[in-house]
Length: 165
Image 1 (cartoon, rainbow, N blue to C red):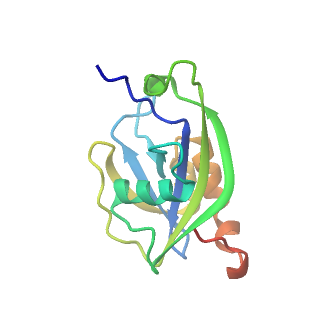
Image 2: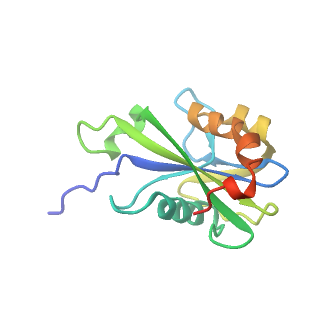
Image 3: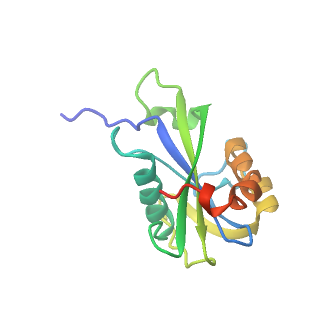
């Protein structure tokens, strides 16, 4: 009998945006605990401990949206920012016993213009592109909203100070 495979408590948050600071949000198939739609950026856990943050970000973007994060039209940046938060009770069963916190690494993915989006129907039911302030207000997760609110400063960084991965 195979042992249960638990999620690794290390994940990425990828804010996908255009130069005009329009942000892609995805609606999870599960509502927020209080009821209502659960809007978020791309998120996901490492598949194995040695998977790099950047590999995880590229994979999750592809799996959840069908967008390639390794082209000239899409620049993936490691914002070198990590959030540590308590795992939502409704998802606690996905993690090993005694694991209560998750470390989340934040990335930005600048796309030249809003590309076609292919949702993963097991995870998301809808998507939208919104101006950054409106996107931040719609996010359920406080860390997601905060990352989007940083977008004008992050996107405005000079090319030589931006760190592509």
